[in-house]
Image (cartoon, rainbow, N blue to C red; front, top):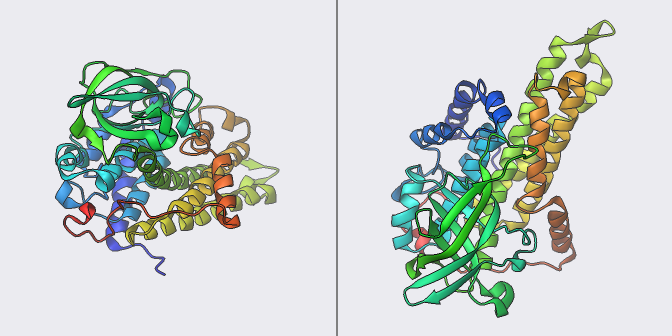
Length: 402
């Protein structure tokens, strides 16, 4: 076991932290208040080679290990959940899925520009009546000659208005239930595609989230990812990667709550002493620290398994569940430490609390992950080998095709 960061990982952390301090922190309160998604941040992340941080160099990425992606997500969420979400969706849900399941043509056409940050990518699974119950989705793909005709819609799609490419899941055989779901690459400029942002969100207001619609969208048969009927497996393996980044981001929320609370403890005095000297405040600070350290260990264990090329669904589920719960609790305690000021946007902790709720819900609710973990322990659930796996790190050319 190795618990220290490599020199390269330390450099990545410092680079992203400096970026967040200079280019996100001074402006995020205004962006959040206005519900404004600042696309220039995505462009800057691309310039820093962070939109494909764990994608092999042969496919346009930086070629770093999977835990480097976790570090990027942690530091970005320290600034705001919106920008970690952008990387989670673009890299974790879409690009890593293409790395695992895409053929060489798809990788060259779509993965390479995505890894370079020249194109932005998103993920379309959730529907108005299909969240945790993926098999309830209604979007269909009917094959006609050299095309699939997509009809339907998706909701709560991050980067809905910003993305160029989407991984979309649709039924090619409704009678086969989840075994009849397939995965497709859809481009924004395909005729019949449209999107619409959702307004009035509780949190992550500086992010772009909304709906995407398919009205007889003609998708070339070459854009089928994997095989027909393999979409459910592809979606679940994609969620392993997405949940990994969400868990890492939750560590960033806890870190932000700690930093804000420590600063406030040093500034605020009651009953003749700094509030940090009151034991019940110390208890809340200690809980944040414990949550951060435990969450990081769970996250980096999942990343270690990814680096080994091993299945990590169970470990990533646990990391996502626990880290997001810890982050929500940390944000709640941070508001409590700030007292009445915590209820005002004069301080950032109210934003942390609003932002921390969504990750407890998306990419598997805490209830879903609780059941998953119980099923693993009781022996009711076992993960079977997948036809395609993520390449182990360090990467070797074309290992993703095996």
